[in-house]
Image (cartoon, rainbow, N blue to C red; front, side, top):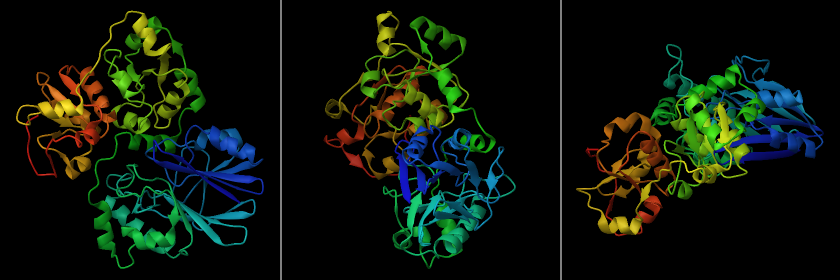
Length: 470
């Protein structure tokens, strides 16, 4: 038996490949399915099943393309109603894979169709559970992503989750390995551990949601308290996973068109496209196409695309470093952006060599800023998450989370000069690029962000309830 966790840090997402005696299954695959096909080829195995723990909201699964290319059967748990052929398994149904078996455990709560898969080894011993978004290390799945108006509330889902954990998962032996669908950084939970696998026994002792003496009411209150709004693309990805989507091959064929400067400009104007610059932030600030948006492919690219670009069908042109074109298109497709229409051939250098107009973003180093800063005069925007700001921030800073920049931009004044920082420099450049594209020209980025600002003598404070003029 072979069990491999295939973890993608950008999405904090775990897919799984299980192989036994020439047969294999893949659990919760990403949309770019080549890695799973390669594993099967290496093991001379046939992928028999593609197991989906639920209709994912935070990424578009590769179940359809993988099934099409291998002939595998897509499997969901009870109550799932996909818009394509799939096997809807019964609770406690056994799936045979080579010499091992997988039991389907219906564990509603995160969503109504949420399912945990229990792997039993060649000897008949329960070996591991693949919990999807039902149980994480240190946390459980949030119960507010599959609310249907008039049908179910987040409190209802939390109640189902309480029962699922107590009746289906906690009775299993302590040495059963827990393989969750996500780790720290995912928006599908609140308190996830940085670890990506552990034992059920450890979770019974360490996970607040598995506390033995916890009442249903306490559980419901705990898991529904402190939830922030999910990224706007979540419900749209869930619909794609349920209803179907364009093959990634078609997305690649369209997105990997190399366009000359002239053709790029024509496509930009003719398609009302958004231009996405995916280079490193240190390169972007020095020079970029006026009106383009920065989201660097070396950072948390896909989640920030999903959080900030509100239309999945938005035509996208992109600028990238040579050789990274496929990576950009694949990572856009992972979160449902299926309308890239080409990239700038030769990258930013080609634009510059053609004598086209160039924009840039002013910067001030942390030490220089610390020597100059006056909190009564300067407008310092801290674009980190509210939770980060609450933990510690520069006195006089204004929390302006990047997550909600589209919603909160109306609070800013185009005549005001703003200084921006985040934790390390990535998010502040994203924010600056968006503000620049909307007509805010008086912007200064602080490279290195709060990490370097903390090394200066600027006064810092824990969160104090305050109202500050933007």
